[in-house]
Amino acid sequence: MTQFSKLIGITMEHGYYKNVTGKFRIAPTAKTETLMRNRGILFRQTDDGCQWLIADDFNGFLPDDRLECALQVLDAAFMYVTQLEGYQPQSFYRLSLSGKSQTVDVVSALVPADAPSMSSSCFCHISIGLTPEMQKEAKDGKPLEYRLKFNKASYLWEYLFVRRNADTDESKILLLEDTTGDILFSLSKKLPSTPYGDMAWQIVSTSPILCRQNPTYNLLLFEIPMAEFIEELNDEEPRWQERLAKEIKKDIEETKREIEKIEKDMQAEDFSTLPVGVWSGIIAKNSLKKRLLSRFLPYPQPGRFKVEPEASKEKIPDKIRQVCYI
Image 1 (spheres, one colour):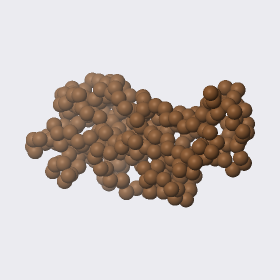
Image 2: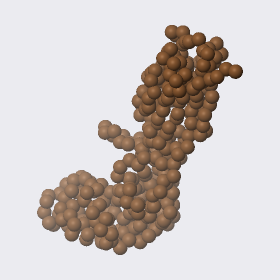
Image 3: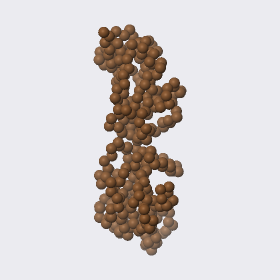
Image 4: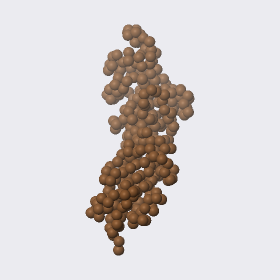
């Protein structure tokens, strides 16, 4: 009875998924299936990748023998939760694996390729050159092992809060807090004429957040009186009015009278332009009188809401959006 030894193993890994079963499929090309029949190589799908087995009495590879296969993505959410900088879904790519065991960052290792004869669902074309050394290592119980890794995508989280009551109190500032302390959000900014309502209040995370399959953040929405917030700012950051005046491009001289005018004419949304360092300490002190508006807020889901890219010369991280009615 012919004995077989493991020749090559491929294991798929993705930082977003706790279990990659059913997320990927590795399919040999027709040319490789013919090669496997001629060389006595067996192919097996596994929950997290695939394996090639070789007969122990195999006579050896020819110089041009290569295993080629298509890496197919089976999860519709993959393109949204994966870091794919530079990857073009309509293009074709090749991933060439060397003759030694290794861990490969798939996206960074891809190179452009001509269109292969494989299905359109192919993420990339994997190619492995076969050598006599591989056969010997397999018989010695030391098969080639490839770990193909994908990294999680990260996004700014954008919340749009639409008030059901049109009589919005302009003297209130909306404040979104993560009680776990992992996420810091901007102060609210008023957006008129949105697809979701005549007026929405935008709150955005101050830094990108890595996608997680089961996030454990705890988000609460509060409103705080603008007058009280200003009072705390005056105590904590005496020169905040000057910094805000620059941000909202109000032409003022640095005099007490004109500074007071800025404060008097200010709207709640103006504070969204203040640098985080000016107001974050006040929020952290937890001394403001906050009224809870909503708890158990849902998390933004990649791909659920379309977010138009911002027109800017600077590269701005992508956003994912959650719309909430309050």
